[in-house]
Structure formats: C-alpha cells, structure tokens
Length: 129
Image (cartoon, rainbow, N blue to C red; front, side, top):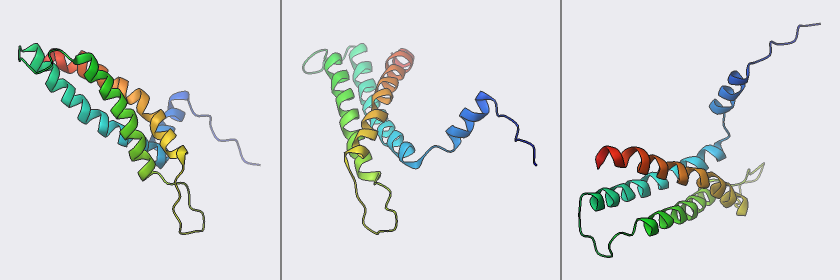
C-alpha cells in the first residue's frame, strides 16, 4: 500500500488552478480585457484632455462616457466570447455555439470593466493630469 501524497497548501492549490485555467475562461477574460483596455485608454485621453482645459463639444460627458464604456465592454466582450468559444465538439466536426458562450463572456466582462476603469481613473489619470 502506497502512502498518500502530501497535502498542498492553499496557495499551491490556487497557483495550480491559475496556471491550468480552462481555455474558454482564458479566452473570455482575454477578449473582455482587450476591449476594456482599448476603451479605457480612450476614456483616459478624454479625461486628460478635459482636465488640461480642452474645450470639447458637449462639455463634460465623463459620466456618459463611463456608462457607455461599461455597456460596450459587456456587449462586445460577450459577442467576441460567443464567436471564439465554441462548445466542445466531441467526435463530430460541426462547431456549435450557444448562449452559454455569450453568458461566459458577460460574466467575465463585469469585473474586468470595473477594474480597468478603476485603474484608469485612480492610477493613470493622476499620473498624467
């Protein structure tokens, strides 16, 4: 009878889960992160321009821009995830997609949209303004 393998620490288990994340989850997070970074950089440019005194048409529309940013990250992140994360094929050749792929993208996009906006508004804007 062989001895039981040694128990892993909490940190070792989490590190192993991080290194071996399922590909659909990595794709969903990557798609949402890419969209959020592009839109976050656009928001950063707009915010810095307003802070430096630029007179842009429409005045100060930061709140609208943030709301639009979140909606676009959720929508585009879900759409891109729907397109790049098919269901497992099994033995067949046919690739199928369902609303679950889009839901995975939506659930991945919610925290990413928030975190990118926090980094842009609380870290990058004070550095550039």
